Image 1 (cartoon, rainbow, N blue to C red):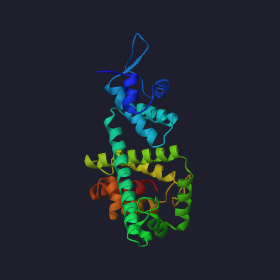
Image 2: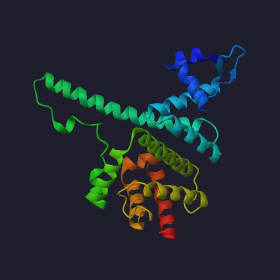
Image 3: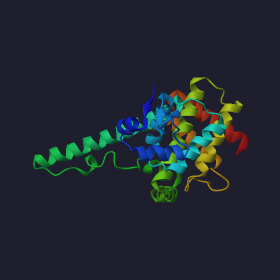
Length: 257
């Protein structure tokens, strides 16, 4: 089954001009072009378009999306399902954040309607990206948090979205390896630990960061925190997955740091 460019523009809430631009940019190619010059799209093209629209909503620009697709091609990643599962993870996380914001605003409205003063601790749930501030400052100092916070606030929207995409993909690969029972000391697991190390190296404020990368103490301590704190463990599928991550990071640290 195929749909015309006009039909897809209407269904996707976009324009024919945008779809032609996606075609010219190599992001979403039509399945065929008719004798009349019209573009037609099959189901595979629509899945690709759904991914592009989701990434655009996350703030990624067209060059960044094209580069990401090219990386996937070079890495030999096939199939849209894993990528869409990552998108679903992002959307569910955003849904939870919005649910908390909604509940916070509803509480403020009801409090004001009763003629009462709202409590500050009830007003800003879901608005703050600094939920781990106390842990970071307690473990690694206020300067470490301040540097990473300043870096994050200074990132443009497309770079923030790209960072989220990278973190979500790494997290999904950790969960997949843990689910398959990969040995923490194996080459596959250690490649994940290397990616984790490089990811942390790119965050200003990471103790021992920069060219040298995280210190051994920081790297292994972070692995322990993944297991001890349910908020971190959930990123790796729960305590069992986080334990696999911790053990893999510990092997990597003993070998390389």
